[in-house]
Image 1 (cartoon, rainbow, N blue to C red):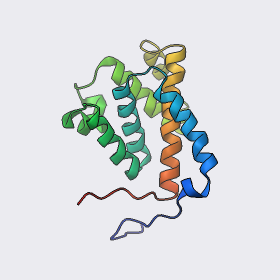
Image 2: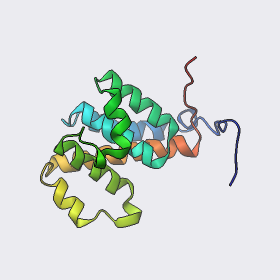
Image 3: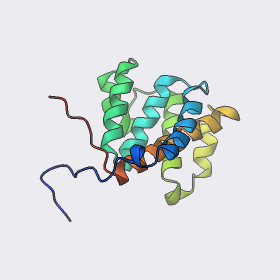
Image 4: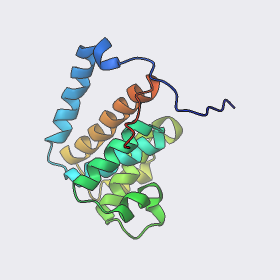
Length: 155
């Protein structure tokens, strides 16, 4: 195990190095932002996926964005343990389960029982939109983690 006393330095400013690539992902994100899914739900999904992936930059950003959108500190703290928390609606719980399953696609290949559960709350376009939201944040997470995008430090 490699231990560091400080956060690792940024490896590359990926947006400056490949602006067309970032514009392409931003196009997917723009679709997600205007697809009709609830903004607060999208922030919960982004936060949970970023927690799973270990993206400090995105966890910070989406916790802040969720708070700005009206999310409570109590619910934000419970996102990582949503299964054990009574603070989330059935629809939110289904969306969080889907976000986890799609993020961890290499582990269980999105189990049928998760699909059946989520399909009670999201179907057709809404299910595709939910999946696109998970895909988009996973793209951003992978860029930020790979190139070690620094988390802003508030003084």
